[in-house]
Length: 525
Image (cartoon, rainbow, N blue to C red; front, top):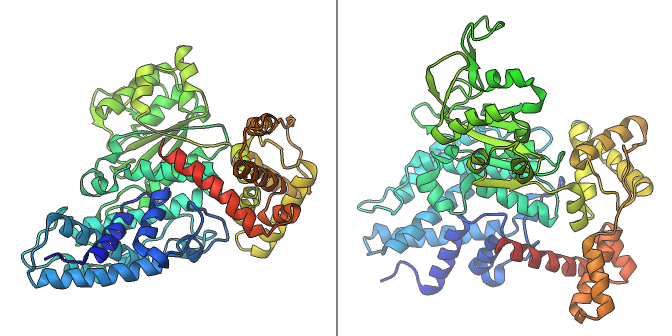
């Protein structure tokens, strides 16, 4: 006899899969709908973080899903305790439901923390709940004469669930906006941390992901260091239940090094360290960034502007990536690098390799895990209203103790930008330029761009007009394209609704449906 009736079983399988799905891809929403049926609350096609969003806005089905999973767990647990037979698949689904329930009970406080005051996720409240967590683990998973497929250790689950929450927290804090490009970036960061198969990650790979470097590419000023921090702060850190603490504070596990800010002659010493007397000014031994005393196995070294690195240092770093070995300058002792390397560049590395300035073997050691950050111009073309989200985020960080002043500054900046720069300003300096714009308007009331570029007609607009001229669009395609055009020009759903003479919710429904289709298409490429 099965542990659950067929209808309950379908719901249990769907909820069990939600816990292992990439939360930033459409698959999670499809699984929620499958689990809840008519009780499913529809929402945006992908998770979108805005500075003023709430938990209910982003996860409207969370409470209903936890309630259903709890009822299903109790049914299955009762039959397992009664020694009813169970298949391997039933035990797997049961175990996954337990993990889903444990996360909901003890870790799901991601967005309850104010972004202004917490740059990192504090762990004190997590440690306080360990006893209750351990009691639930024993109740659900330490059943007589039952062995579950993954056989996960209690403390591995505890550490893994805290890792999941940290990943949510930092990805949301570092990547804001409602554009398709921002959604893709969040999904890519999550996959960089947990891989595309989160179940395999938790059972086998969580201790070894540091062996794989990550390469972040994209235009200057697009937040590559924030992506690196998101990855570093989201890595697995072991929990020691005997000492009731994590083996290291994850907030100390990120070290950034801008390679262009250091004299070429000193980069090797900064990275690898040097022995006493290795060169004229080496009056004492120095530990480099790659030394285990500075970067533990849970740590991350971020090498910014890797595309500018001298070829000789590329060779030495290649050895680190291949064999995890290096030597200090002036020392023959071989040492091991035990952490993770994340590198970033705004250069086109294909062109750099063709010109002989960047080694191909070094590139192919870096590129297994690659993330590309989108320009601000692209994000605003996809979601015009994001200019306000970005400005509000920057203003809140500038005035963390003065929320009303931050709101006033936001309104002032948006008004000034639309009047003097226009909606088509390309923001060549990306987020970094926008930050300086906000600061300049805060101080002087104006912002003067350097070498302002004339906005050009975007390729999608030219394609749309060409399709209209040739009569290639269906009624639905024409309506969707025109609504999207008016929305992008007006900057908000309400303004677009007034211009089009329809309710703003109709505009949102049509535009979001278009974005959802594009996101689904891109995630299956």
